[in-house]
Length: 329
Image (cartoon, rainbow, N blue to C red; front, side):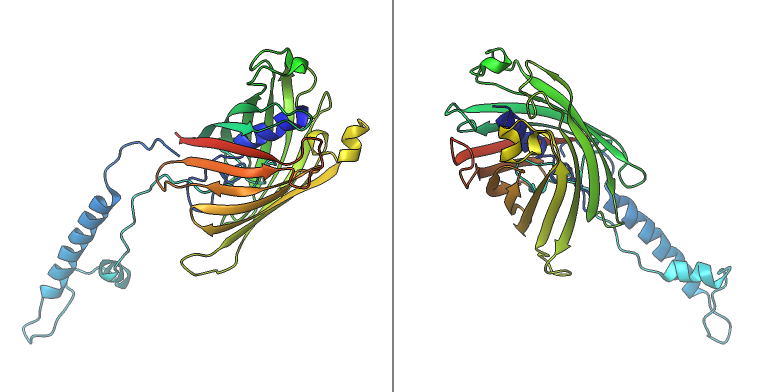
């Protein structure tokens, strides 16, 4: 059914990896890399600069008066001398990295911006109203700058990979949609972000995509709160809360085919840098699971969980998973 496909797409879209400190993506997958252009080592250039500065400083200190007292003969000003004597930390080379997701099936306030793209896939052991398993794939990339002005995330999902859904024509991949999200970082550290979007700007393959024939709009705010601030493992708690229509409607509204606005949200605790525990309310069902980013320098994120743990839909609790790969260019 349509809600299953929508959640599958969001699961894969929600895997956008976080590439640098303070920046996330759709679900922090994401202030949500692989390809880094080759460049000279920053440590090499910094060490050469420090060595030149040290030699220049030693030449100043060697100059002496006839009475043996030291003088800084060549120093033009106190500021110049202070700059020569100052010891600066040598920066580490930049590295691409991934962080685990913070939601299972809903958007977050963070999103992709220019230089970030991804591909992902999702699988469910059953549909909400059918015992048949199914999956989806998604692609997306970002534009703009969420820190300076606003970021734009554009994504597309392709559904019904099993080819069993007659509402989408019955052939594999014959259903999908395109969506977007505008997002903006709200603080200098990149801990808080807000986003608004529409999940089905363009749709094809039938009306049962992204909450039926009704449009899906949403607005969401996400914040990070470090439970052990200043420690090696800060234990980030990431909370998202939003309002949405379409696929985010309540069970009652979905069954009555009524369009209204409903609440959705997610809570995630990153217990270690590579693993987060997640609980998500989609508006009609509760999902629980974990997200893994096992490779620090390889932007692969895996989500594993149980969908509809309270059994709100006829098929009850089902296994859900998604895998995403982030790209930085």
